[in-house]
Amino acid sequence: MIVSLRLRLLLWLLIPLTVYVVISTTSTYDSAVASADLVQDRSLLASARMIAGQVGWQDGAPEVNVPPAALELFATPSHDEVYYQVLMDDESLLAGRPDFPADVDFSIIAPAYATTTFNNQSLRTVTYVRALYDNGTLRMVAVSVGQSLRGHQELLNELWQPALHRQIIMLLLAIALVVVGLTIELRPLLRMTDELASRDPNSLTPLRAGELQIELRPIVEAINQYIQRLNTQVAVQKRFIADAAHQLRTPLTLIDSQIQFARQLNAPERLPQVLQALQDSSRSMTDLTNKLLQLSQAEASNGVAFPRRPIELVALTATVLEELVSLAQRKHIDLGMEVAIDSAWAMGSQALFSGMLMNLIDNALRYTPEHGKVTAAVTQVAQEIIITVADNGPGIPAEARERVFERFYRNAAPDQHGAGLGMAIVKEIVQSAQGSITLGADQNGTGLTVTVMLPACAAPSAG
Image (cartoon, rainbow, N blue to C red; front, side):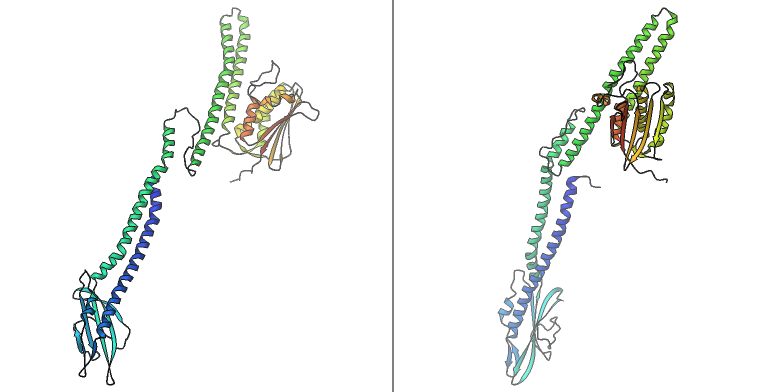
């Protein structure tokens, strides 16, 4: 396979040009052959007619006097050989070569042309027949004239070889211009290549199109779009690392302080209390770490390469509710599910959708007081799946509802545990599934109702 752009473009130009040169040269050659034949045939016929005009009667017998001018018509620098024959209808020879290679048909009045071989060389001949009258007697006389083809070939070469040379020069000039033109036109692309090669590895600034041709600018635009996506991903990763470092510092410092306190503790009876505090801090850090990993996965799910497949949300919601039943029972919360459809399919990741539902329902259970009520519902309207999680807790003020999607923002009492990442994770997962999320209150203006709307997809085939 040819990988050179110059060579490939050159071939695209050379193939039609070569075909054109072949066709044009063939046509020119055919025209040159016809012209050379016409010139030679006219000279032969003029000579035959001139000789035939000199045939007459003398003392009752035909005779001929061949004028020198009849043969001087063939005087050429190539020194062609000329032969002639004057033959009566009774096969008697009046003049010329008796072995002239011509088959004479006295019944044909029109000039007859032929190409034959004589004396080991090609010969072009013409036979001209005319009638002779003498005292009522009709006789036929045939004059045949032949000429070798050296002058014919020289004339042919003079007619078509200059055209062939012009075509070859045009082809070579086209090749040279294509090579030079491509070299000049590819310079902006080569400069862009050099710019990329000399860049700092950490530089993600867009490329400049500069003098790049319109046809090549989509390449730069595609590269810049890719750079922009890389910038977004790098920014997300940097933000995640900064958030993780910031948020993990506090529980780690707390655990270190508790360990130091335990080492300096002189009252053994207080050790279980310190260990419980250490365990609580460890669980908080584990929960924070898990939330950060979920957030990282949710952010990564916005990438094109993230695997997606149809997920059934009714059964998934029921499964998540079963996992959180123990938490609801500890707080005596009425945890239920309302569903009017058998299945609801959306395109995404089961792990992420499970994390989305887990965060929504877990948040509702945590912020709903004891003996409260939390209800999850799944419905479908046209091509849209609607998931709602409603509780009768304290709710969120309207002015703070947008802020709950910010990372580490907590609209909770100081004694309530949480990392402030749950709703940020939910929003990232919903956005990656091309959905939307809204917060509101119930009909009485109390509690909190979270509504997630996702595009529906077809159920996978049984096969």
